[in-house]
Length: 167
Image 1: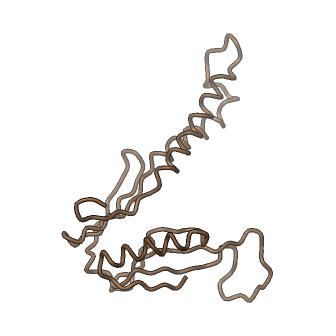
Image 2: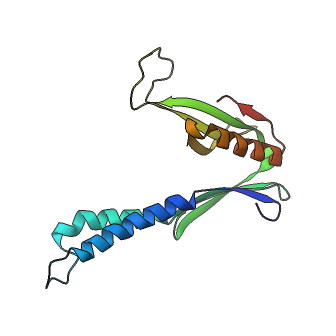
């Protein structure tokens, strides 16, 4: 929060982990190169180099929602490194902040009582416009319910919007 704004930001910790994985793969390629061979761009290194490149590229991804009540703006910034974009909305165009829940790995409306090891509860933080459009701000595991409820309340209070908690 700065200068009367609040922001919901893509976690820096995840960026650092992705960068670390990419660099670890790259350094392992360099360190395991046989004596006398000075090339890392050989056919055997193709897949590790692709994974390293994608991991480093993914660490450059950024996504943030900036709420500026004084200017009545909601700015959505997203992209990777030099390829990025902004979407700008008016806070006054929105009617509510919403928390909802679904079970990943389960078809909606089914009565399957067996629990799959692949299913898990997901909490979605979104903001709904007066025209009915829903903008998904964040998706969390239900393990973080208390944290996301606090974030949702902060956004709702800041924007003077009601908080609908369906989670």
